[in-house]
Image (cartoon, rainbow, N blue to C red; front, top):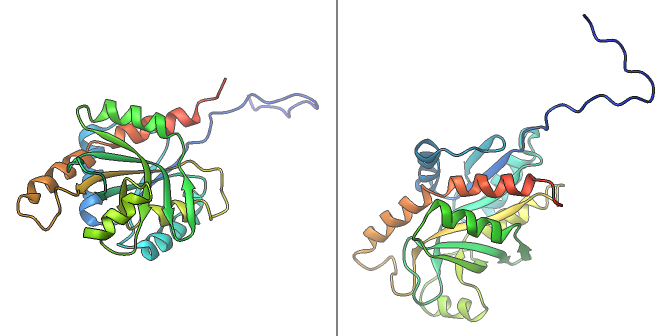
Length: 230
């Protein structure tokens, strides 16, 4: 039987909530491969469609790629996660350690991240045994070495990469300033483990395996943010 018109003053029962999309942005093909492999290997229930894009290296490429992706209808309100590899700044960091930014810093200022504590707990469950560092993630337009690494550490930053700050700033400049944003990086280069040294191939493999394991934590973080707050 066909449904009749809704009487004046009545409220139709709400349908299912629309799926909540998530955009994960990384710079390199090897990072995108790790994240896509992780989806196949580790699965995890996402609250909506997940898109992983490779932006290319550097803040300008990240800004262009993220802005273009979010201007499309399907991802307009998406949560955004900047992910991939980074250089650790603190002594004692090792390849394969995780960095969860509480804010990203770039030439345009700082961008606070959403639900950092939720994300840390989710990562500790998804990648048990790995150290998770939390603090400011600095942006750079080039690979940071030597004295410059120490100078950045002096600002309070715990890690540096070239795309996260631009990714999150672009995400919040596309008309949806309330969207959740986060930056999760895997240390591949640290003060005592610089990439120029022999033996860092092992560190690179370790970082790749960790990055391959993080997606369930991203999904858990996103689901938690969508739950109604009491």
